[in-house]
Length: 561
Image (cartoon, rainbow, N blue to C red; front, side, top):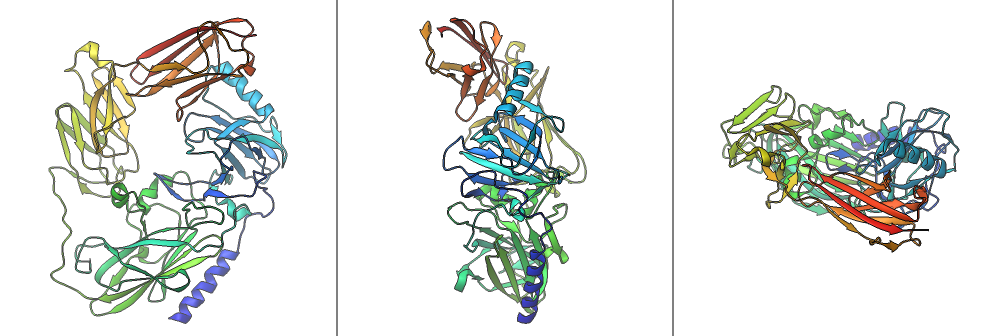
């Protein structure tokens, strides 16, 4: 068996050595030593990470370079997500992406601001024609920042192929040194059929781990019977950083035979939402830890599986023993092994998994409509991966729709009839999800007369909420009838504690001005270098509207030379 496993290791290492991607074609997008906060295909909330997160020394404004010759093919500016992002198409067909930028280089910045002023919108997306904005390798195309959904200053960098499929940039020679083996945090066993059991239970069970030499692990010996699978929580650390990054490759073996292989080289954006089928979603929803299942359940379309025998499921027979092994590897071939000794033992007295029956059973491959009182829930077919009993109850304008422990792969609709509210009050109503602590979170709501509708991918509690309070607008560096000639930026703070900010509009002397919105800081910032102001006396007017239509207006007069 040892010879067989050794042979398999040699074969897989040779396969890993075959790299079809061009080397030395792309340069690093920064001119500092690369230290990574995030690696490719890391497990994130509802998606795989599609690039590298490169640390920028806790600062903004570092020069960002074109990784190779090409032309700017897309520019996008948004409040959330990638924030300010730049896309460059290269002659070899690949596209590089630079996100969370502070600003673009001068020619790109000039073009984007022209379009922002033309459309009177901060959020904008452009697709310049080939040749309009050509760039050269080593040319500064932007400056690093912290815009969009970034949790701190860094540069998000991607390489995509012609079909917009993101590929691990490390395969192109862009990465960071890694001399540390991955770490194994926990291992779980999963009985997968009604008569399967592990250590006398049909429930999933965490196994005790013992570290061995050179970073390897052995789990407690288990007694098992029937179809079972395993799952692990693992991470990798790169040199010079303490971040818990994703691993590159996972392989499993049962009695020396390959079982499954998960390879994190590339994925498509269409499949990224199916990350929730890879992980133990129920465990994540309650413990906030991601256990990667080393077996494939039905309705799992992920392309990450490069080898699968019996979908990674092993079958344990009574009185027969076996050994299950897991190999976890990072990009630089640092690896660890997990060994799980298994004794086959069929029991009649094992603990059965308790399935709570309710009045409603959802078949995943059929559409479902649930109705009670003033609430209707419409669930298209194939919204969920599995059939299950679903909790459904309505009381006092509050919907309890199961628990948020089952993942959905697409949106379903929740509709509340609000005809029992007075017409004058309906405008201020919205739908909100309710956390386990009772906090309300605005769920994007469409008001259709007597019906409030929201689309969501999350089970849980929803209620009708009221927002009668308009947003707040607070000046930061401008005061009535004061001179602000020494300031380059005009700054305001806006906020809305109920339904949240929906839109804003700012003018000076009746002319629209571009104010950049940072939702993380609740700030609006205007750059006087936009040269909109030509007068000494200036009338500023800002209107901010929340998600139910409440508006606030701020006006002041300031002077500037």
